[in-house]
Length: 350
Image (cartoon, rainbow, N blue to C red):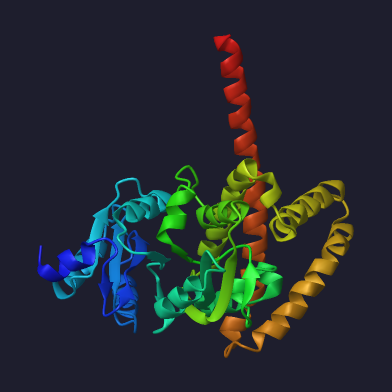
């Protein structure tokens, strides 16, 4: 191990008077975006970095991209995770963390040049145990650009401040947050039983332990969103299923924005059943949502440049709302059946 690597690995080391920051990047099959992500991290104006990339058993060149960076920069490390699970990747990185502060960065994103320094400055204030920035979606296709606009709309994401916030404020959840390493270890890291929403659940436990979270829009994350409506639907379906797992653990973590889509899906489904022979009645039931969808598509669509992009905006909103709603009901069904199976098995053992 070279002298620079030994210096970076030494716990509590300071480089040019700066405390060491461990940047954590979970990655699986991210060869397309990972190098740009690493470039944005390694060129930060804060240089005292330990960059831990956890490869979730990728089948592409993800690991090779990291090794090439390791050959150029001693601050980069590669950890392998055969579980292909984001929470376990985060915990593996936490086990390797030598820094005072931990900054999570998504593999298909880039961060603004002063991102790490600003995060550290805000954490050093002592008021906040977590800091995060604005997550700006980036689209590369007509559908991707429509999706990016939908993700910046309150109609699309509810009161998720990090998608559209412009002022610093206390929040309940951060995208790819920055935290003191000691605090992360105190609350036990991330829950590896969760397939999604592990970051929200982690922030919830932090807040329950008395910690406070800050959103600062000066910290900017450029994040490559899904580039097709079908992929967006699958993503939000997975999010909805994952929300059930978190709600089962922490029922009081549920908010209106989490319940609105499944309520709408149930309303539409029941209305269809009751009015199967009278479709116009069913459409009349859905009219208020349709009007809101149309109005927001017109308003938000002004940000898009071409008809091909604007025509994909209403389906993007629908994919988010229906995907999440159906995912919640699907996850609830799976959870209830699992709980029933466990109770029956317990009775048989008795």
